[in-house]
Figure 1: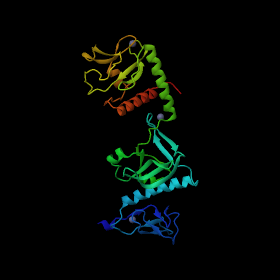
Figure 2: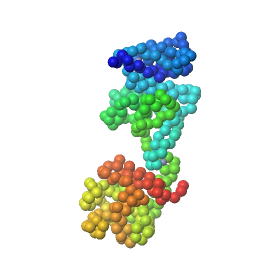
Figure 3: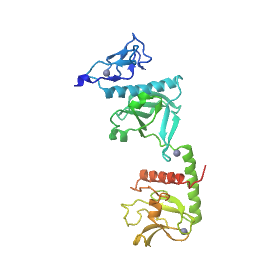
Length: 325
Ligand SMILES: [Zn+2]
Ligand SMILES: [Zn+2]
Ligand SMILES: [Zn+2]
């Protein structure tokens, strides 16, 4: 059965360690499979589209061919860029706040790329990006298996993971399927984030609220009753019905243990610092224009806190609460 499986070789090595595509490869020259190094035959005729023919092999497989080809291509593209033959490859990343794609050229400080670099911790990365003579970041290529969790956690440098097939289709655009580089905030969101902080500080000052630095997520809204702008908080709960007090002191003075008719009992809830009325959870968390719409407050960790704060700011931008830039 395996005999009938044809190996597809999109690009092959020539005599130098560089990849050639069948369009530009020349007849009469020697070409090799990037995975098993076996000779491949360039078929270039009048009728068929040019391609490299790989003979049936037990020692080679399609996955390795794609994997090896993609990482070599990344190294080739970076080397072409560094020698001035082409523009910098494009990093296509997602803004952590608005979730839109943002293109940026690979930064100039990248000096070169090294194929299959062994880090001092023993891990081998597919491609290492060198900055100031040190591997500063890595590019991993995924064909069918994601970078395993152990490696992802232990890797001492930031990395992105690219889809091998996509790299072969367009090696000058790096669009991560997993992005562990420093989070990216686009210029628009950066400005909106600043406006959010200014606004929140202003309201906090007017209402005499001390802004907590951690644990209590914060946003602002108009009090449903007095219609004035106020600061509201969200904090981790074990469940929607968790009735216990917030776990971190000092508890902001507007979070109070109050009786609610809607809930039919007492619970810890936001109140208006101006008119003292309850700002119910439903209004804040479940209404599409609520300050905490979609916020999970799942756990008491920095990571969860940062993610929630980003989403709060993201919604404020989305709902037009920060005005235009
Ligand atoms: Zn092969
Ligand atoms: Zn953005
Ligand atoms: Zn009020």
